[in-house]
Length: 310
Length: 172
Figure (cartoon, rainbow over the protein chains, first blue to last red):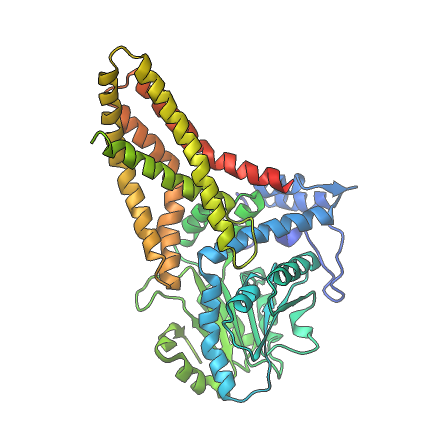
């Protein structure tokens, strides 16, 4: 990665799959075009990884790519498990759900995980029963192979959740709460504002999106962690790049306020207690303004974790 | 000391093999509740570790038997083992403390142990392994000790690859 530096540098997994944004149908991806794109950016490591992927007449073999992405998500899940991400999401959701229950909103309280991949977060919440019986847990992703794998895994453990290949903002039964993990850094500039703009549907009462938090320790930490934990070259490449592309609190708050003015916006859990030590993950948090007071009450001692909330 | 040094080295090698078993299995099973899977993986690591330890013990026993001054060589083995423990015990102690801290159900604490201890310590493990052997042999690098030290390093450092490869083979 010499010429183009993050955050402009794309991740490999962003380029080796392509979907029609309207129909979500899989589109052919030219291996040489992706490889050459990385070469133009001076990223020979990524170009080599792409060049080694199987193809058919120059088009990346979609089945091989899907198998690879499922393995990548397996490695990502290992990271989520080690960093207790399921528990982190559950702890963040609990006060919001409590607020919604007090507000007597129609049940079920539908939680939708955007870009769920193989569905670790939704499956964890379902397996641990952390959200209560009045919630509905749904994971959505554009990649049907990942959705199928998530469905298979959930079925194997008889979990009460489901996964759909669909645009999260075009669900027949829309989400009450939108969540995601490691998704928002894929949106840059106006696309990030547009992403938040889509949250502003009347049925959606809140959202919480988790991602890496940029800090001086993010690069060495991400590099070290991926060097010792990840086996696949693509996981190592994209994992470190994700940490580097992560948005700052300022960027997230500004984009969310511009895109979703109908929500009170804040950043949740970015610091370790009252210490000036950044957590590995932070989250951009939004809730309808009329629920704000009730939420602060539900947060209790944890309300100090919610910063810049207005 | 005659018993304590080999026993401690055995326990540390077994502990290391258990961790290796865990690491080799991690990231390959995407189910949520997989306690059994990890228990089997740790046991597998420990069993592979016993095989490696047995090889080292056998090599050491053959050397003692073949050496005319067996008692002297036994003393050298113990002295080298004692020095190796000076490196391996603090390393293992920190790992065990971090493991104990993970019993506390705190997202922050568990994340911190991952960042500050488990990731870093796995990264430096090969260096620590080599440092322990070099420190153990330093005062008296006689060929028998060098052979045993080399065998320890070869087995310690290849076990994870061997176990990982066995998972890959199973998959295909």
